[in-house]
Length: 376
Image 1: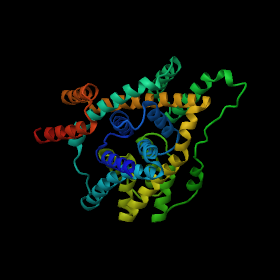
Image 2: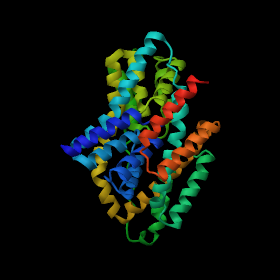
Image 3: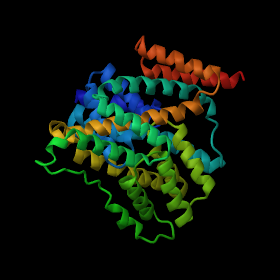
Image 4: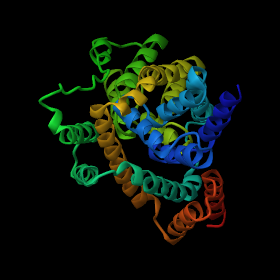
C-alpha cells in the first residue's frame, strides 16, 4: 500500500503542474523517478520511453502507467495513469464550463510565458542525462544524427521511429541473419477500419465514445496529428464542431497541465455535457491502459533478447532525437526575449548544478509570468 500511495501522490502532483507537452512530461518524470526517488535506473527509464513510442496513444500518460506498474504492480498501473489524467481532466472541465457559459477562453498567456522557458531547461537536462545512456555506440550516435536531419526535412516521425529502430537492429545483428529469422513488431492498428466504416450523422454519446476510442487506439505522433484526427472526424465528416471550437479545444489542451489528450474532455463537454466529457475521456485513454498492460511485462524480456535489445537501442536513440528536434522547435517559440532566455538559463543551472526540484522551478516560472503580466 505504501508504494501505491507513493505512485498516487507523485502522479497527482504531475497531473497538476506538468506543463509543456509529452517531451516536458517525460523529462519531469525522469527527474522525479530516476534522479530524485531512484525508482528506476536511466536504462530502465529509457526502455520505457522506447516502449511507449512503439504503441499508439499519449506517450507521457503511458509512461505514468508503465511507472505505476513497475512501482506498485497492477494496482499501480491503474492508479498511476488515473492520477496523471484526473487533475488535468478536472481543470479542463472547469474551463469547458466557463467556455460554454461565456463563449471565450481564459487568458493564460502570462502563465505560459514564464513556464515554457523552465520547461525547455527541464527537457534539455533530461536529454543530456538520458543521451549518455541511449547513445551507446557510433552506430546509435549516427542513427540519432540522421534521424534529426530527416525530421527537419519533413520525414514522418513514425517512419523515423520505427525505421531507426529496425535499422539499428538489422545492422547490429547482420551476423545472425543467416541463423535467425527477423522478428517484427505487430502494431495494434486493426481497429482503424472497424470504426472508420461506421457512418455517423446525428450526435449520440455512444458514437462520441467510439470515435475517441478509435483515436486513442490508432494515434501516433504529436498534438498536430491529434488535431488532424479531430478535424477529420468532428469538423469535416460529422459537422459537430466548428473549426474555431476545435482550435479552442486544442488550445485548452496545450495551456493546461497533464496530457494533451484531455482535449477530448473539452470536446465531450461541449457536445454532451458532463456525460459526454466522461465518455470522451474514457474513450481516448482506455486503449493506453490496455496496450501498457499487454506490453509492460514483456519489456525486461525484450532487453534480454539480442534482437529486441538492439531494436530498443535504436528506438531509444530515435526517441531522443525526436525529443531534441521538438525541443528546438519549442525553444524558438518560447525563448522570445531576454527575460525568457534568462529564465531558461537560470533554470538549467539550478537543475544541473544545485539539483533543484523541477516542480519549484515551474511554480517560480508561473509567478514570473504573472508578475510580468501585472507590470507590463
